[in-house]
Picture (cartoon, rainbow, N blue to C red):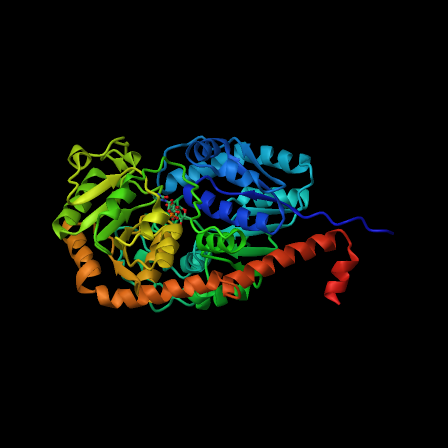
Length: 488
Ligand SMILES: O=c1ccn([C@@H]2O[C@H](COP(=O)(O)OP(=O)(O)O[C@H]3O[C@H](CO)[C@@H](O)[C@H](O)[C@H]3O)[C@@H](O)[C@H]2O)c(=O)[nH]1
């Protein structure tokens, strides 16, 4: 039978409703658009409204033939909360969004060939199995935190799970292969695995029977996480490591479009660019950047400890404080930044509600980053060669923080102590006393990150393989002779 031309595959991409997830999957979507694939990018309605309000993504993506945004209801919560909030949100999505998503997939024209779902959105994979469409799981977290989540059932079975408030948090956990010598109780996923009793509903495990998928994509690079990736490959041989995604996309666009300055904002908040002007007037590597990402919340007391520690360190700082991140003792949002900080003391520091973070980290005035260790922030800091002070808040951030400080030697660990004296000492250690040791390690890792996404580098080659594999699978699905030729 005569074969018609094989159409380029139509891939449906669906991120979880959070800044870190939308960032990563939009970057992946753009890389796949550059390869000529048709992409439908599904966003939750309220997330998409915010994205469009604060960025030019619609205009940017309109140049890609076959790209479209679609929205889906089912995630009304605007106000980030810790673990129990995340759990409720996912339960709600499962009920409200799953049937709509299924209908969308079945009725799609052109038909969907693949679904790239976010690793944390289980219902997406259930739908894919129900309608018989192959999936690839995209993980926006590090390989080390993925592996830790994955190993939690073994930690539980070996009675090694720490019970909150009753344990020496420096005790070693020996049930996560490859991390036996340095993973402490305090490094287990915060909020999800540091529980008050073993049947705590917040205990979160990725089961050994990870939902059925053809392959995993992880936003990391071999040179950073090789040993842990080897552990994961024992269970999942098919892994594509194509990170750091933000730098990968930038590098690709530079080579294709010869664009020198490329803006890839995918912000869900209004970006305050006045901080760049302020940074322009600061000496090289003199400013500490402080940001705890898009979900972290903290008490007024913690906020004030950070404030006093920063001011006492006598180092200048640029601090991102989302008004909704400050809570009172009852857990209610204060909805405002305390007056003392709002008035600002511009000669000491500069406070904004949301910054152009990638640009800030790449600015010559930045000498350090006090971070919650969200995976995007960690990768952005690695690429910019900026050493970190780690104050992980929840989920994957604890494991990331442990790897940043103990394995990669790229920064200092606050060991969960939020106290003005500790903050002051850490800032001075990072910016002055121990600076030398971090300058070398961060520069080396930044270079490895850069090479990984350059032509012939590990992540660049892996992306080419992913693109090729999708094309081959598509040909196979169409029974193409070219596919058979490629196999023989
Ligand atoms: O003022 C700011 C602050 C942050 N960002 C950006 O927002 C993103 C934040 O992402 P991330 O550092 O990963 O933190 P979260 O927003 O907290 O991300 C969630 O999603 C991540 C990916 O799964 C996880 O690693 C985190 O633990 C989880 O909290 C980064 O790209 C930043 O560049 C800005 O652009 N401006």
